[in-house]
Amino acid sequence: MLKGQKLFSGAGLIAVAVLLIVINLAAGLFLKGMHVDMTANRLYTLSEGTQNILGNLDEKITLRFYFSEQLLSGMPAVATYGQRVRELLEQYAALADGQIELVVKNPEPFSDEEAEAMHYRLQGIPVDTTGSLAYFGVVGVSASGASRAIPYFQTEQEESLEYELSGLIYGLANPRRPVVGMISALPLDGGPANVFVGKTQEWFILTQLKRSFDIRDLGEKPESIPDSVDVLMIVHPKQLNEKTLFAIDQYVLGGGRVLAFLDPFAESDIEIEKPVEGAEYVTSARASNLGPLMEAWGIELAPYLIAADRHAATRIKSTVGGQEKGVVDYVAWLTLREENFSREDFVSGRLNSLVMGSAGILRQWPGAKTNFTPLVTTSDQSMPIDAASIQFFTSPEELLQAYQPGGEPFVLAARVSGNVVSAFPDGIDGVEDRLTQSSESANIIIVADTDMLRDMFWVSFQDFYGRRAAVPSADNDTFVINALDNLSGSNDLINLRSRGRSVRPFEKVADLRAAADQEFRIKELLLQEKLSETGHKIRELQKSVTSETGEPVMSEAQLDEINKFRAEHIEIRKDLRNVQHALGKDIESLGTRLKIINIALVPLVVIVLATILGVVRVRRAARST
Image 1 (cartoon, rainbow, N blue to C red):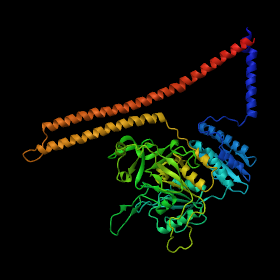
Image 2 (image 1 turned 30 degrees about the vertical axis):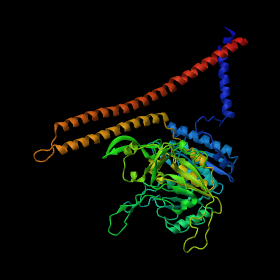
Image 3 (image 1 turned 180 degrees about the horizontal axis):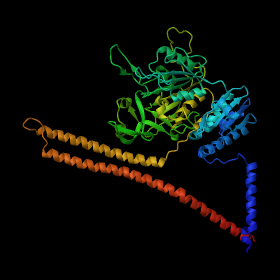
Image 4 (image 1 turned 180 degrees about the vertical axis):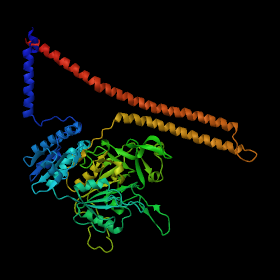
């Protein structure tokens, strides 16, 4: 046997096996909890916000993790997720410098641990025909006895795991929640939307806000803002009276922070008003604004203009006459991605996606002395459209056909800061004591859309053993809570919440679809033009050819024209099908290439590299002997 082949002898193989066992045992003992996070958003690495929360704990917190290990062992996905949650909780305890005690419970049927889980109202799920319940949740208990719980960890919401856990700990360490004063003309609380519609489900955005903030309803037109309000949230302010505007003005001048949602056309506003006695009910105006406050703050909402963006268009099902006509890009509903968000601001810095409906356009007021910082913008391929186009049911197809990119981005949300003066320099009747300028730098966030708060734009729901489980598809709630956190002075939770959901679309596929869809629309427009032209010619022929009774008759010329049109119609429809077929082929081809790369090319590269390294090592060993 050659010297270079001694490694492959029986004794050598035994030595290698023993060495591997020793390495694995040592890794289990000394490298426990260590990991390398190679995900794009570093989802498995505790963020700076979590580390700040853990480092600032003033009192001890006990985390009780309830996981029915045996009962859930038959559900591989849940069992794996349970191990993931436990490992993350161990990381929390290790980083908290003794301020977090982790207690792991394994609740079995009729055990004391099950009684504890039921006491804390954790969600038990049936796992067999005997009615046994399995538990998978956590309870946090502070030294003062306060408790907060996550009833059940759903595998579908793994991306927001760190935020849920850090939010629980933060809430226990900071029991005093910021007070948010709410002024809203929309039924966020599920109140009647109009005189014909009764009470509905509370909007989920409000449910989310109540988890982190003390929400105080100030009514639609309050005449004063309580001193206890940390942040004033204004939603769809319609025709506010002078006293309400003055109250907001004085609140800001006194150092109050504002988050305002305005809209040139609020699709969610379906209020019905009766303008005069005996008249029919009519739909009220759907625009909102803050009147003179906007100029005082140095910002304006372009009147009755909606920001359309083909690049961010949301794909929706198109229906005509109650029949589905396929999927179309709706340029008035925007699905915004990472490139649309300012990365330099806490509020928008780590958002993944937002969905807005008929959003307006914000601009800095000419000559304004305040700072205007865009947070959310469209692409530079946007164009403004009149709100009437949406109000009077212009179809998505018609909007696409009339689309002409303008070459500049539009601002959809912005921060206004700096010193401001009163919008009422002469005051108002009945008020003597007043502020004329801000006592400190103002901090105001304005959003040119209210529909983004509505459930249909960003969240769906599933029934989870009798409990309504939310499945967000966009970060609309994240943006709102980030803004309120930031305005109330808390930034530790923002990075956690912002990295909660990661929407990673197939951009190449989207580009292929957009290109083919554009060609499809152009051909469709040509078809419609030919249809109109042929119809006009038929009408002209009918005017000149009539029967003895005066009724128009079908002449040979008309028949020839109709047959010609039908032939053109069939040919163009064939072309349209070819475009769609080509699109499918392009996407299928792209998918095939990706499969080849993932299934064959990557392993082949690994094999080649391993072979090269093996040959190099053998040659080195041979030279050394």
